[in-house]
Image (cartoon, rainbow, N blue to C red; front, side, top):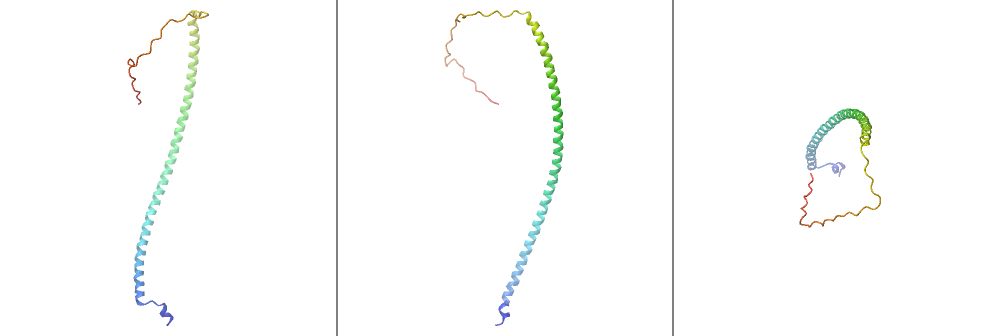
Length: 146
């Protein structure tokens, strides 16, 4: 036997190998087309994410601007509130000053209340009414929440 004969495929084996390689080439073509299609879809998805990131950055900057405007408006309201509070306190002081003078003048004309008697007070003569019977008490209305 020669070495070439040992390693050389027979005609049937070579035909099988040829058919198998054709099958593999068809499978490799379908898998390569699948990979290409997957690649296109991934590219589209990456584009979508990039667009979304740009929009988020734009919205974030506009949101910060709105927050800044609101903060300025609240600071202005706070200052106005402080001024109003000072005015109310000043008015209260004025009214308090006038009312205390007026009340002193008004009450000067009145007589003081009579003094209370010293010692023991006479017993009070009154009767405690009996408790009502259960039939005379009207039923309680239920408490309704809104």
